[in-house]
Length: 178
Length: 270
Image 1: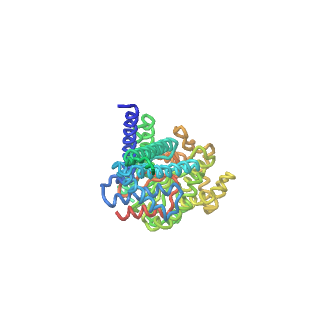
Image 2: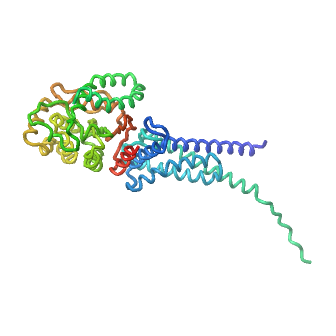
Image 3: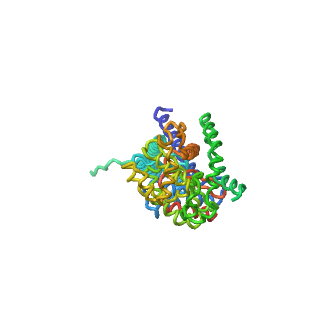
């Protein structure tokens, strides 16, 4: 095995691990937001309650007008679930990784803005009860870096595949017109 | 109200809260053990406080309408609304904290006029004066003294309404006087006669504040601080919602009334 092949194998393995880590994090984030609070069993009503509780956390960021808070709170957890499953599948990884990076970038920007504004609120990242602070910023910044690395890796690998699988066209020598 | 009813009512608020926080508190032993011990000592007082809510306050009507003018001061009643409302909301607040003022003006006021008045929500105020604020402990003393004579709701509103003014000049009495009749203001002043030293506040190092000897309201403020420390309250305002014996995770910061109302509606529709 050549050094190039070894490097390629390591890169592929890291890409898979990064993808799976992101998938697990997004699936857990969705689960933490949708799971029943208090001692309620899983049901449509319990999910509705959890989403309403999450809406309060979204609202505490004081970023969205009240009429947009609820739609955002009801959209985000199912979207995180979808993104987690998409990353897990590995299908069209370039796009799933890019969307993940953009989403985490948006989350990180909002969190930094909120922290700098001095708002002492719950993060809401993995369900209720976690205060927004330096540690949550460090964690989300690390996740953003991971998502960015996976996106770059996915694009690089995708380009390699394109080059390798491209049909080889031989340019025939021009015929001499005698 | 019978003793059985009082016990049932107090357990409705306190027990789910303790159950919710006990697992967290035990991880901070031995400090937490001391706090729990303190809570156990103060629990009977808390029961009295909760149970002392006039049974006739079916609406958010000011409590002083139900209090005889010459009644002797008792444990402060810092609750608004009907104690048998399906939802109980406990708010840990600091009178000098701008977010608490904002939360009161934009959310709690609307909630009191709407869901508290209609008997859907029972609002329980807890003092959590922060050490960083010069007058918050003193403001809590005024509120507790007013609550001892059944005048909490008006003084609570007056303190938040004039927060910027008394934060600037420190003259809390002026704004409390504006919310009370002259006779009631004299009674409140009399309660605070022995409160000349620094008021208790929550400490950054989480050590327990000391009550001033001769100041009858300080133990109630400390009781609230101990309760808040167990949650743990990390910022003000922090609130905990109870419904059907379940306690929902504490939330911090300013939540607008439409979003809070939506959460209440979701609970009530269960």
